[in-house]
Image (tube, rainbow, N blue to C red; front, side, top):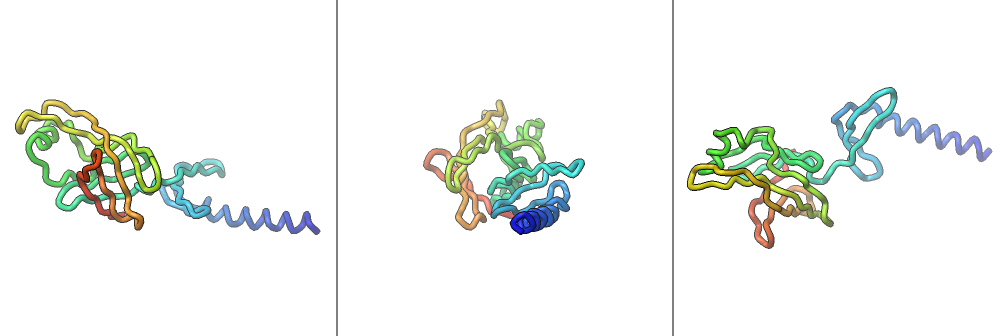
Length: 161
């Protein structure tokens, strides 16, 4: 009897899990209250990647749109650039689809650290591209992301997707 009940539970678990396996690569699935992205599917095996709470599309009012996946944020749209930043884009140092945030690591409850691309310049001329340390703080509702340098808020982003 115990063996039959156990087998029934295992079969139920397999049926439940098979619903997850019907997902397509790139789609998100919920398991145990966590969100995972289907990375690959081959020969009946799935590779799932735990999604970061930062994953998504972030908009800075009147400025950039940045898409974050895993530990990197890429330009989706620059928004208006000026001075050395515009010069760096004109020279091809900044590109749509290119990294603007990198090495993003969770450092605590709703906080991350990493780096942001930075343009050094002389007036309107870009002289160098470098990376500077940043911190990001996510609001409890997950809709607002604040980028900081030290104890200074630099820019606020709103989640689009």
